[in-house]
Image (cartoon, rainbow, N blue to C red; front, side):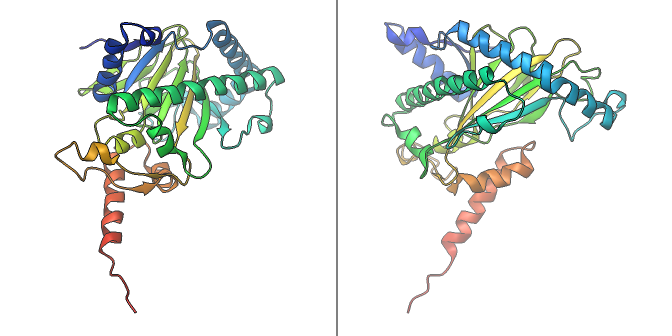
Length: 317
């Protein structure tokens, strides 16, 4: 099995730039994931984010999770559970309008730190999109513009904790899925593992590395690149020991952004009509009910809609 791709972003500034861009390209085509080190977000700041996130879980979320487990009788399950996940979560929206001030129970320091973290992650996401444009031969800013819609991108952070699970063979931390959106930036626990991706029919661990940011590609980038880059199934395996922290930030298209394969990439490929054209919000509505299923039927559903629209007769006076 090939080694999980790790990208040292400092090497983009010197003579190793070409080799580093090749690592990114290979990862986007064959893994759908890669891990960033030396990405520009200060280690001391990431330590503060981690400390405040874990403190908030202990103060405000842990007891609620234990009560949920008890109410559903999850500790006594005898067969595999396929309709829920062993995770404690809440969601912070950053763009187009932040909801951080509205989330209850957050300490003011935590609110301010997460606002700053979001600013830094947004900047990193847009830099990464331009690196992908460079590798794809698209003009700089193409992907950001494709995501923009009328109000800019949608950007938010899913704050998750995966507590110790007594029966990890029967309950997943998070069931297998691809991500619906654009580019995902994950700050994960470096002591407790659990994230896995599906590669060549086998589940592969995403290695926890201190102060790294794990990147994965969502369904929208697969569509825009006409399948050159892939979104990949991944899951979280619950652990019997240790509480795993996960901060997954989703830089997605705006709700009214129209998503379709980049013409410049379609022209380069022999198979032209691989992916449909759709409004991102419509895709999300479909995804909501089909998240834990294969992505291909979602794409096919929109291709069917697109073909039907193209076949409708034009009324003339």
